[in-house]
Structure formats: structure tokens, C-alpha cells
Image (tube, rainbow, N blue to C red):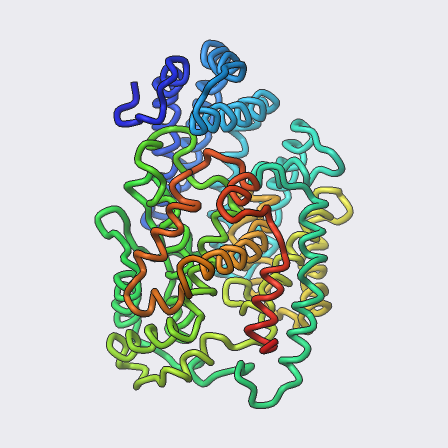
Amino acid sequence: MVAGNNVFKDALILEILERYRTIWSIGHAQALLGWDMETYMPPEGVAERAIASQHLSMLNQRLLLEPGFVELVEKAKQREGLTDPERGVVRVLDREITRLKKLPPKLVGEIAKTRVEAQDAWKRAREKDDYQSFKPYLDKVFTLAREVAERLGYEDEPYDALLDYYEEGFRTRDAQAMFDGIIPTLKKTLDKLMTEEDGLYPKTHPLESKEYAVGEAEEANKAVLDLLAFPWKRGRLDVSAHPFTTSMGIRDVRITTRYEGFDIKRTLYATIHEYGHALYELQVDESLMATPIDGGVSLGIHESQSRFWENIVGRSRPMAGALAEIVNKKVPSLGGVDMEEFYRYANTVKPSLIRVEADEVTYNFHILIRFRLERMLLNREISVDDLPELWNNMMEEYLGIRPKTYREGVLQDIHWSGGLIGYFPTYTIGNVVSAQILEAMQQTLGDPGSLTAQGKTREVATWLREKIHRHGSTYSPQELLERSLGKAMDTEPYKRYITRKYLMQ
């Protein structure tokens, strides 16, 4: 029996959860290994880490597909009278079992091994601005992704199979409809802002080129997390090449940021972004601990939390003022910043090359580019040889700028090296859903930016816990939105948010 899980009462479900503990423990270990690889692992540890990841993934598959365990899950699918969390356990396990049945163990192991090797190759290639050295790894990643898609099966195109893994029930046509819904509004907004002179949201700001002392910025990030009531006894802040969040469970969630020595908003907002991911995992109900539903339900819903905190809260005028106070206190090397100017600085709008540094208006163009390229690669319409030039052409098409280096272009994201094909649309899903959350919260609680700046972060966090976080993966993404916000994913609130903030309409 799983201690403390009083929401699970059915004897069959309890037996499933007891047997699942070993599977969960493998996932716990894999999460820790992944975090270590991105933070403290010595560079020459890659070869052995790849072997360990390969065999742990194969062991995880073997345990999930053990006939006795599969039989229990099949019986549970026919069970009546289950609680919502019990049905959630069955849904999540059935999805994973169905998927893994279609993938040979050798393929599962090869994917895990390739991820480790490709991520290491990406780091070295990015540092040297050397796409040619990374290209064979990227080709292998997409070859494996095509095989997975073919084995899983799909409705319209291979991308469907991969996207569904990250966003349950979401299809390529849904992603295309989402982009079609928001891109005209974003294009109109960007065109207007680019023609304005001395508007509220500048194209550039002097603080962007101002250098800061890294040690001071570290203290500022800690102060920001203190303002956000980050539970230090259950989390860590470290440094990595690409900021990320790793959850070992609901009592051990770790985030990273990076320091570049200039443009301090990059590290501050990366930290706030990852805090949003961490809070989701930390606020899953304790009764779901060490079960198949003890984490966020999808990457899109997860991203809605990080984008909510980073943009809707973090880039609001009240929160920008609070951040300015922290910077003035903790980062004297900047020489002092004005609160209103910090708001303008936090909300500069201009086409830029790097996705993670993009503003709210241009960010989704970066995602659309990756979505288009992934689909073409999977459909064999292009090869990895074509990728850099096509990337640069699309950047010019959508944003009017062209990368001069691979580091600014095709090598900037870690995701493809990690095998995360079909992942990128979840970032835009997150933006869209974050605006739905804002409108719902404003109706019952008030403005989240004002509350947070006033030190009332826990009120905002509690609202999110009750509506979204505590459920873990009990419900599918769209059912969760319908239950919590009264409507499935809808682009209209996001368009209203962008128009109201940036066009003053």
C-alpha cells in the first residue's frame, strides 16, 4: 500500500500503485541523472551516462510491459466506481503501456543513449559554432523520431504521433489552427510597434548592454525567488547552459538559470520562468506522491505556468517595480535603475535572434519556425543539410532579421539534441493558456502582478494550486482546463491580452 494516498481506495488500484513504485523509482533516478548531466557531471562522464540511461530506459519499459502489471491495468480499465485520481492513474498508465508496446526495447534504449550523446555534441558544437560536427547526431535524432512515429501510428502525418506524447489529444491540425488564430494579431501588433517612435515599449534600452557582476546577479535571483516564496528546503537554483527545471518528485524540484554578464533581465526572467515550472510540481497534492499522476499533465499546461509567472506577472508594471528594487539593492554594479524605466526595459519589443530572450510579441514567431521545420524534416521534405539555410530564411520571412552564426540560429536550442521532436508547439499553448488563467484569476482574486509585488505571492500560488496544480495528471489537459477555467484552450484571451497591453486597445 502507498502510504498517505487516501484518495486511492480501490484494492486493484492500490495493487497497481504498489507495483508501480519500482517504475517510479527508476524515473526518479533518471531525473536526477539528467539534472546532474546538465549541471555538475564531468565532461568525460558522457559515455558511461549514455550507457546508464540506455539500460534504465529499457528496464523501465520492461517493468511497465510485464504481463502481470499490464493485466492489472487492463482489469482496472473495466472497473466501475473509481475516483477521479484512480481513473487518472489508469488513463496515464494505459497511454504509456500502449505506446511502449509498439516500440522495440532496442529502439527505446537507442533513443535514450542517443539523447545523452547528442546533447553532449550539441554543447560542444554550440560553443564552437560548428554545425557540421552536430549534424550527424541531429540526423540520427530525426531518424529515430520518424521510426517512433511510424510505429505509433498517426491520423494525418507523423507529427501527430509525437505531438500527442507531449500534449495529450493535441494534433498537428490543432497546432496549425492555434498559430493561425494568433499570428495575425501578433503581426499587426509588431508592425505598429516597429513604426512608433519613442513609444511606451522601446525597441532597445540602455540596460540591455550594461554589464553586471555575476555574484551580485546570483544574490538578486535568490531575492526574487524569496519574493516568490520559493521553498528552498524542497528546491535548488543552479547554473546550466540552457535554463531548465527537473522534478525528482513533489518534494525535490530543481531549477537552473544562466549568467551572461550583461542584460540582467535575461537571467532574472529565466529564473522566474523556471520558478513557474517548479511551483506546478511542488504544489501537486501530497496524496499523489510516487504515483503515475504526481506531475504536471502536459508540457503545454506546464508552459502556461512558467509563461504566466515570467510574462503576465513578471513583466507587469507592479512586478517590474519590485524587481527594480531588488536590482538596486543586490546589483550595485548597475548603478541604480528607475522603476518605470525597468518596466520599459522588461518589455522591449523588437525582432531578435534568440528564442529564450524574445519578447511577448515576437516569441511565437520563433515557435512557428521550429514547428514548420520539424514537420518538414519528419516528412522528409528537407534534410538536416537544408536546415540552417531554411532556418535563416524563415527568420527573415517572419521577423526581418537573419542569423550570422549557427549559435544564433539552428544551434541555439537544446531540445532537438534531447530528442524532443514535436515539443515546440507546447510553448505557444502555454502562452495561450496563461492568458486564460489571467482572465479567470482577475474575476475571483484580482491582479496577480499587483498581489505578487505586494508580497502576496501565496494568494496567487494558492489559486493556481486549487485550480490546476493539485490535480497533477488526474485529468487530461483539455478536461483540466474545462474543469478549472470553464473552457478548453481558447486563443481569444491571449489576443485580448496582447492587444490591451501593447496596442492600448
